[in-house]
Length: 270
Image (cartoon, rainbow, N blue to C red):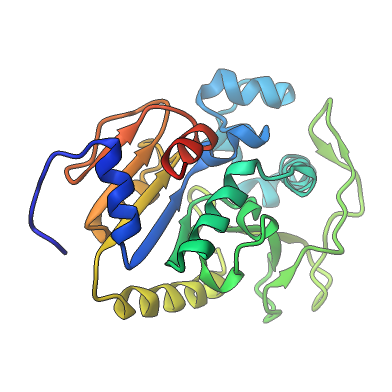
């Protein structure tokens, strides 16, 4: 890490991006807002998208206990999200950033807390993506029968959206036939199968070790409620460019662009 602390402005940020040997891209829920995805900010925002769950917070619903107590409700929630993410087209900022990285010949890696698979859909190399909280596009067995994590490509969940309830048959493990769940790290989750993410972490660690020069971070839509992405980029980058319309406190070494991800990327990479 470089110890020099200097004030930064937008022109300085652009210069550092061009000088960087490595670009670390960090993305939180705000990255998908310009694609039309919800960020579930606050209970009112959550209930607006899931009125049948009024009275429950996102953290209470995103809990593996529901797969034991009420699997139809659990898969009503996650089945709807699976379909939503499948049908969402990544906004133009994804493509703009990837094309810039390729044109400039930059070494890059994505660190994201999102489970939506939008970077892969936008054409980013899956071998350069760390999904810190797992992926909704992969499933695991509730019974831990030994079945490896499997892709959800052939899984279809029919959901009664008015009641947020999934209709049978619910997704099942191809090994034992028991109930399946998304391979996502939920709240109070002690049964998450982390092996897929651990393989991503190993590739990420090798990438970090391979860089000897300047590493610049681009943080996109990552808040403080779940600060995984913020903490990671602040600890790994020599300089950090934070793009967020809220929670805009600038990093120690860097600056904040007070706007959404799409506008910020267009402004930064122009």
